[in-house]
Image (cartoon, rainbow, N blue to C red; front, side, top):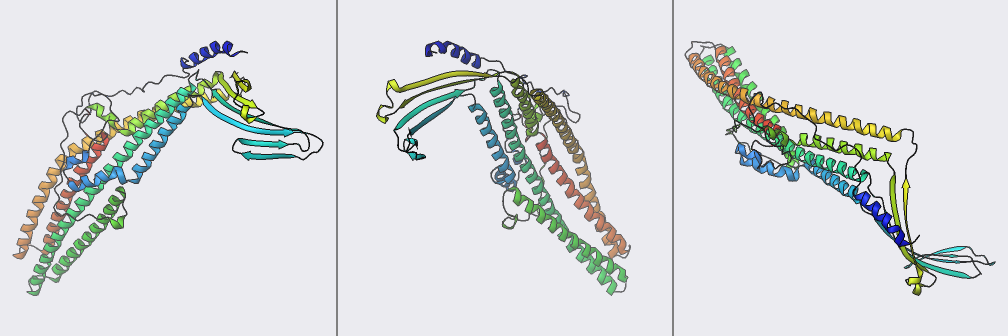
Length: 484
């Protein structure tokens, strides 16, 4: 067959490959009915922006130390680093699948020496700069052949199998990108929550030290009254017990603080023994205000939703990959080279050789293997869609929970503050009555314990508001502001 006769059919095949149909279904985002307004707060619709920049959301809390720590998470946190490595790997897999769209070109060369005769002598294989040499025979005449050729093979993507593979790999890469965002947001949220827990413990410790000093004075009062013979020894014992119990609670606070400090060290990629945060007695928790109308589309900023949706897209494309196995595969091959018995004449035009060909392969029977693979791919897609919808439902629940908690805790915080102030005043009044001999020391202990518990509960309510605000930020995907 002459070269000019083969070109029109090959051109037609190439055009068919470039304009070929795509096996399998085209992907559409799974439907997910959403309410126009949320139960806790009316939100306005917005466009999905799952991968839009979230910004430094932690700055709304106005804590420079927290901001400095958060800046280290994206760089030094090892879970984030692992997710980033997985994302780069998935990007490389996309490039790997895309490479299959192009021909494979190979360069081949070699030298062969052969001969024959009665002398025998076996075969000798030699290696040199020009390639591999084979010397065979022994005492007879020998010849040397030189060759070099350039070959190519290409499997046109007639049925879209390769393009569907690229689509599937790209969906997985985008899911990995969302996983990276989720890992970063999770580490940032955990750091903020741990940091606020630590600061609340600092405030509790400062309160406990004040109470230890106050209970020490109460013990001295009880001791003086006992020495004067106007109070029983049981008053002294009760005062000593109250003081010791408070000192033990203070020691437990130090243990819990150390645990949070160690957790923060790991989150910023540092060993616990080399990390430390100075105690801050003055803790004024900032509670950022929630805008009245938060766009419902911000929920789509959640990276876990983005990852689930992209995995559904990848699973849809995989159906096409498996469906393409029903159709024949086409492979085009060609080569051009030279062969000669003399190295100096190797590249002479008279010694040129070429070949070109096409082959078609079709599976006739495989025991239902292709049908089973297509069925498995469709089932995997149904699973991915269900997981996506479940992720959306869980995200809606999460945001509703945090909005409800924010509303309830705001009212609880005011009540706890009033309760702590009233309990402090009551404890002061009862202690003065004890000094005047009007009440028993049991009343003093009861009032002081109630005041201490009320003040600690007030601090814990403030912490709950801050950690709930952090959880709401995470629930909204990293912020409240609509993306530009």
